[in-house]
Length: 95
Image (tube, rainbow, N blue to C red; front, side, top):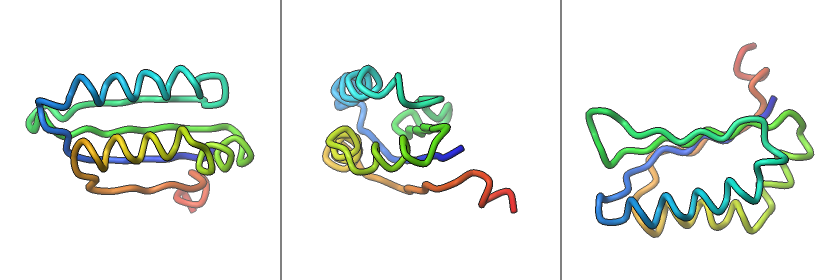
């Protein structure tokens, strides 16, 4: 299983635009990804966490090289501030 995790701050006035971007991306990739989860921190309302999982390396790499990934990255970067990005094979982390 392969993953992408992004955390970042999105100001309240940009929440709707951010959600719309994520909804569009999710609609485009939902057939290829195993899980697509976005959560908001309970204590810091502007802090978001995005987790996407793929079953295959091909699907994961295809996404990382896609326009959808560039839009996703830009949504965090342009509308707010990226705190952390991590990605890879979950089995590498477990070892």
